[in-house]
Image 1 (spheres, rainbow, N blue to C red):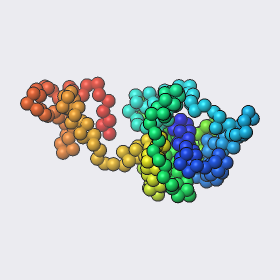
Image 2 (image 1 turned 90 degrees about the vertical axis):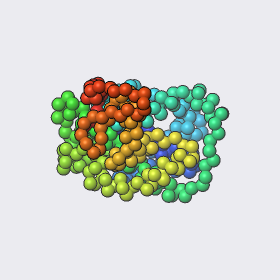
Image 3 (image 1 turned 90 degrees about the horizontal axis):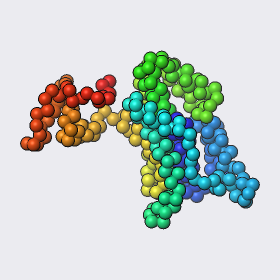
Image 4 (image 1 turned 60 degrees about the horizontal axis):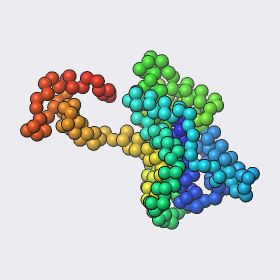
Length: 300
């Protein structure tokens, strides 16, 4: 969750700086303003401080002199590995990890920047973009917490830990890097419904996400057309759009798997496992129920 939160803030900063051409002080002012409302958090608080800090070695700001290579101790990698093992989607956090790895390839990025010109950045309504970024940051943070809590729940269910997610939120509020006002609502959501399948379907959070969806989409679209990478903002939106749909193109993926590997598939109109002889060269594969051995299927 920490990785995702930090990356989301960095992406919003990137748009403010390189699309809206805002100064460090202007950006810091916005984060200070946001820290008085729903986005109040430890990371938003220190972002303002980092942006305002002057460099004692130059006449500029220290953040502008820091090499853009993000370090990591391995906790992000471990989290994504655990998510994969538990069958839990964590695209916001995975995107943050990928971005840290790409940032480490500084020399390659410098060389690539000389080959690929950046797209022209068109003028935009500054206040509208800032409002959209605020909406996108909040909605994406909710998705990041939803993914992290889903991972904890999956591990708790598998290993019989009986973790109380509302208590997790309360403990985090007590003081840690992801301490945030948002945790009050998260604690309340899981206190009211300990069996909540996903934070996104809590009525309160669902209403907030729906309200912020238009601005969230505009912010991601602006990043795309401006050539500004926003992997965690986009990963959060993709997570939301995938989770909210009752029918996905996974049906085609399953058809392809059955075609080249005889992996079988389930149907929407009858129970059981099925295999299709897609061409004349396809042979009978025998007992289709044996074809799923070793698969980690989500049956619920």
